[in-house]
Amino acid sequence: QKILADELPDTEVIVVSNREPYIHEKTPDGVVLRKPASGLVSALEPITRTCGGTWIAHGGGSADRETVDQQDHVAVPPEDPTYTLRRVWLSEEELKGYYLGFANEGMWPLCHIAFTRPIFRAADWDAYQAVNRKFADAVIAEAKSDRPIVLVQDYHFALLPRLIRERLPNAIIITFWHIPWPNAEVFSICPWREQILDGLLGSSILGFHIQLHCNNFTESVDRFLESRIDREGAAISYKGGTTLVHAYPISIEWPKKPKFITTDPSRTLRDRHGIPDDVKIAIGVERLDYTKGVLDRFHALDEFFTQHSDWIGRLVFLQIAAPSRSDLPAYKLLHEECLALVAEINDRYGTDGYQPIILLDEHHTQEELAELYRAADICVVSSLHDGMNLVAKEFVASRDDERGVLILSTFAGASRELLEALIVNPFDPSSMGEAFFHALTMPEGEMRERMQRMREVVRSNNVFRWAGSMLVDAARLRKRAALTSAS
Ligand code: F6P
Image (tube, rainbow, N blue to C red):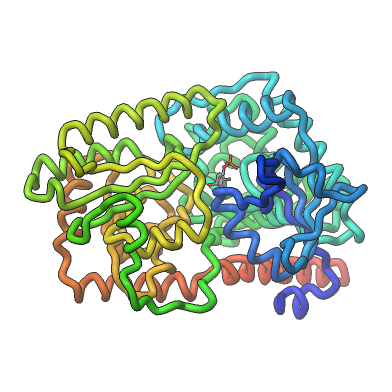
């Protein structure tokens, strides 16, 4: 807020993402408000809440239409509104082609090295282009000046920066790509690679979580477009404009009032699931997605029980697997595989009254997740490839008791910052199995020291710093442009 006021006075902020921050759903008990399970939303919402402005997103909730005004606006957060949510309505056909098809069967597997073959259909590409144009119209309709800051979010909108640039040449367009960017060879699979790169280079700033993804993007541009690349200045000049390509590691809002835990935080969880007090609890929290390495962590658990059979009966793995993109075959298959593997492991090691894996494939509220994070002895993030992974940071931020061990995949962006986690290769079940042993036998002092250090990192590199660094860079670009035009 301060950076905006000081460095970019009178500049309106417009955020664009596919997923909306508040979903209104019809239920038998009336309309309920839900917050989606989305890393993007948990990072962007505190920023928009603080800075104000307009957030444009697809209205996907069954009661969304009932809550908007004539201009499809709703004031949010409902309890104390500080910004406007502008909903864009997409038809079944548009969603099928743009969201399920091109974004999630094409770009998602393309960008994550998770060995799921990307599917590219011409009809999906048509829908993707049309929906990007529809969101560009919404940005133009919402912009009150010709120089707004537009924050474009993620792989659903690769074409949007160029479409906005053509109509608002003086806008500052900051695009953040929340998922990895693959190397140029992998990226070349995409039949519309030039158009995707051209679209993104309409941005003033293009952000990724880590430097490797910036390098991969720059190499892709070098390979497929005629442009001028300034590697030292991290800038790409193309079609008369310049895009700064920079790493901005995303984060979370640091919890405001740390509540020091006086009673056993696992009490309700143990009572609810019948877990005895002397049994340790490991947790996994994600959308059920093939990039998250859920099956791989279960294989590692299997390996751990084989190697350390004295732990059978003394460790329970609680897996939250929120259903996600369930209309897609790859996600349906993963759900079936997951159920089958859990049944197999529970059958192998379970006894009357002991179930090694408890799978909860439903949505959980933020409060329920916070309770779970506090109750866990171990939190496992075993993504096969992940831009950042905010579960790792949320777990650390929740542990004001400075206890708990994080087992973290080396292929999640978070592993570049949370160096005191037990870093694992999820493709190697035996070493990940040994990480369970290390975590369960870790001396109390070492556990605290590791957690303290990780908490310092997340506290200082929080989501406001993430947004602040992008805005500072944006202000610098605007000043530089003003100086150049004056000279
Ligand atoms: O960046 C990836 C992302 O957009 C995150 O917001 C979240 O992890 C996930 O994908 C949400 O997916 P969807 O909106 O398709 O449920």
